[in-house]
Image (cartoon, rainbow over the protein chains, first blue to last red):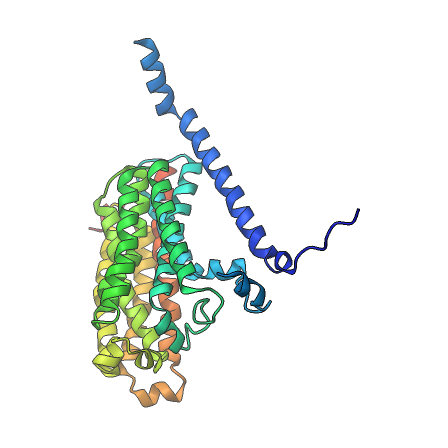
Length: 54
Length: 317
């Protein structure tokens, strides 16, 4: 079975699509990183510990 | 965009990723990134490096978003000015409504994420900066008054305050002084540009000082603002944001800046045309170095403080 040839539009927009893909991937890394840093930061641990102690 | 327009768009006119990036005014963004970074590091409250990185990134994205909104609103002016005719909208690469959507989307994204990553004071300042640049400067002042660049310069001066607020959650004398430094630096910087990009603003009908008050008056204004800026810049050395390293940088650069402003003030239009505005172009380039060096010195002072190196100007006073 032969795959149909890629539409010319995909070729034309390859750079743009790759760029948007990379931006979205970076956004995921940033949100994940921020969440990790916030959750493991001293302030968060302190409040979690004090709540647990009560 | 319809299917027909999708298929009929030629390969050359198709907007690429770089065209959308160009809407964010990457050159202006370097100034925003650097001054915000300095504001953030000069603050007495240490931040987690990743949060600091994200804060500067979101401030830069917010600044870029306001640049996209500025290009959307000013597309008609940009098209007739030599300096801006190659921008994505007048060049026909990006549709105005795409720039509008990108600007609004990124503005909301940057403010929201800055608020979540740091605090809502910093996010509020970023939102106000975007509003000031787009509505107050771009939509209102720019086409209305020759003081456009004086008042509108505040928009470009906010990033160090936002950086400081991201770290501390508030506003302090030091962050206001960093704001004032950029605010006072903006008019001579842009008026020098207006002098050697002559004709551009006339053609676009933008009431720059060169158009409304003449080029001789603009030269005088550059000198007066440079003298006021020099007094402020040197005075900062004796505040919490400054120190001996900053003082040396400020004295040297302000001496050069005043010398350049005096040269511009003394020149006639014939002198300027004879050497293709060499003094005005030189002053403009020096103004870029001026701002980066001052903020670089503030950064060095903050680094010395962090490292526990106690240098004081107390003995000099």
